[in-house]
Amino acid sequence: MRIVLIALSFFIAIVAYCGLDMDTIAKIYDELGVELKVERKTVEEYDQDLKKY
Image (cartoon, rainbow, N blue to C red; front, side, top):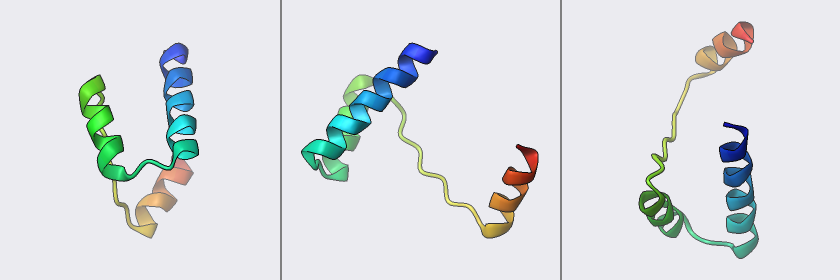
């Protein structure tokens, strides 16, 4: 699991350095078979999450 997280971290750093747009990033994720999720939360939900941790 750590290797996957490290690999994704490097990928994100390369993407940020290259300045790719979100459409290109989404296509790369699709080709890699990685599901890209963006979750929107309310302030109350963030507060609940903080209390859990």
